[in-house]
Structure formats: C-alpha cells, structure tokens
Length: 135
Image (cartoon, rainbow, N blue to C red; front, side):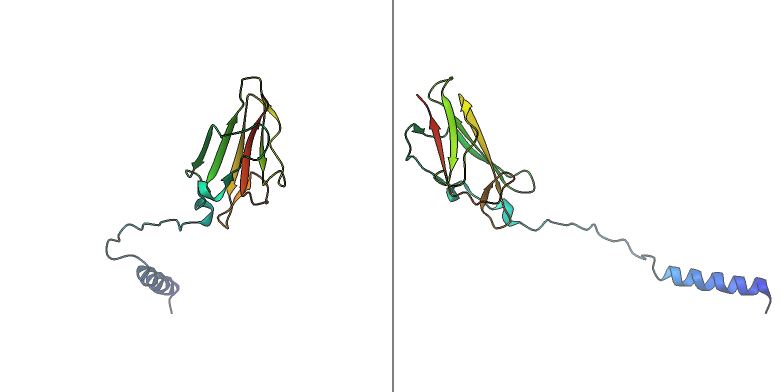
C-alpha cells in the first residue's frame, strides 16, 4: 500500500471519529444552583439572650448576614456610657467571653455545618449570650 494512501486513510478515519463527538444541534444553557447548606440555616432564636449577671443590658444590635458561604451573626453590646467597661459572655461564661472593651464590644458567631452558632474560629456551640456593662 502506498504511504500517501495510508496517511490519507488514517486522516479520514480520525476525522470521522472526531465528527461523532461534535454537537450537531444547538444546545441549551446549563443552569447550576448551589445546594442549600446547613451553615446558612442558623437563626437568631437559636441563641438566647440571657440577663442574669450584674450590669446586664440588652444588646444594641444582633444581626445575621447570609451573603457569604455561611451565615455570620454579629452581636453588638454598647455600655451604659461611652467610658463603661463592656463584655459579651457565652454560655453563662462556660464558653468564654470577648475581651473587655470600653464603650462597645461586638462578637462574631459563624453558623457551622450542623446549623449551630459557634464563635468565629472555634468549635464550641453557643446557645446563650449576655451583654454586660459597668455603670
């Protein structure tokens, strides 16, 4: 068999094989929707605001941001005055507290894959928070 004919035959075979993989009709657009994740399902009512300690007061704000991958909750505690010592405690002090601030402090909680609030960067589940201020 002539070498040119062999190359032509191989080229034709390769072309026919490739044609089988080429779309012959226009395709639609594919739409993908991210599956809902448990880390976006946390709500405000899963953490109780407690008022059991001296100097306890209501939180200034407590909001949830769901614009990221997981829900993020920010609780803000303002003191009774601008120069008051302020702290936020977690789980009746069993899960720690924010560093003491002057005038205001905030705490960031992150919703985990089980749909529970945890302190940012921690694994302890937070079920109670308390805003405390010196006079």
